[in-house]
Length: 444
Ligand code: ASP
Image 1 (cartoon, rainbow, N blue to C red):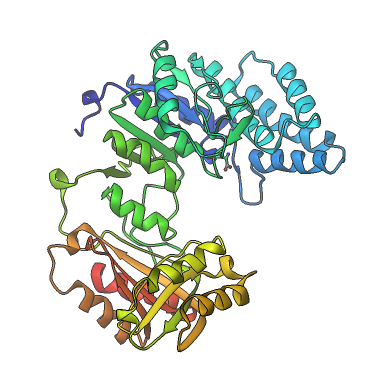
Image 2 (cartoon, rainbow, N blue to C red):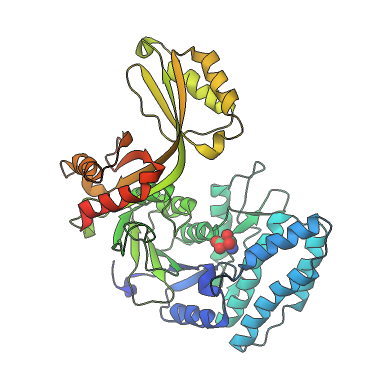
């Protein structure tokens, strides 16, 4: 489906920079009004208006911190109210949030909690947007539910929210939060309004989830590293998952699951450039496939590798389990597991082992009595992702050739069994050079 008439219901999520000021609100309203399928809107809290500005969510966290430390929040809380009042006056609407401000301030001072404080950014922005658009305001707290252990409860949420949203022709549902079984407010992790948009899309069985931000969708590589990278027109959920896991920003990682489950495509769009089609995220690209072998390159620094050597390791039953159990005991999750006949390597996030290095090594030594064990720091991972790799022969060779020609030593290789990605480990000092060399090999 490419023409907008083909869609009956679209859920539209707008990020913080899209709703940072009255001018941005006007752009958002124009986008919504331009297409009657845009029935359900999920706003973030006001973000930065210029570099150096502060996001409202950060100001609200500050309110919580100051209040929890017994300080006075008057000044910082007034700044929050001022942000909203500026939007209201800039839009020229007759709307007064004074009672809301008073209640929120009182609640923050009376221990309503960190998540409650942060969630009010979306709550207030949603109220203004609903008023401005003439849409119903729907507080997600009673419908978006978390379990006692803090994990999002997808199924209960879906039935409660679907039931509620049936009652509304159009609505604004603030992003980022829901509630715990005892009724207290709980937020998703930072950037979590993307998840709310995805949850709402599933609940209303939307035809499309539009996620409006301040860039024209996904780029094939990070523009801070690769000069002027090409945009990605179509990408599958699985490819996106690989890329965002490896650090490609724009969309919250967990936002993919609800819509993917329901088979709803996501369209990343730019509020400041609405005529650009952005990036379409779909389950299957057969209909619109392109020539390119790779879809994108992403990577991260900050990894380390534990290498465990033991003669005849391959014949020792339970060896891998014991190593992984030792890691689990330290409450660490591992990233990759490239292994040889008599060696096993575990790639971990360096920050995770910072406080327990010695203990972890001892634990592994006690568990499997290795001949040698070492931890190497300073590893960066680069993921080359593309559905086209399944068909194209020699992709790995081209990745290695590009690295070799740029004088880069590859310290680790891991090709996912899906043939959707090739991950290489390089020295952190070679990270940027590797990304550039691989991009040039495939794209230029
Ligand atoms: N306002 C929240 C944050 O800054 C959530 C979001 O914008 O998606 O993280």
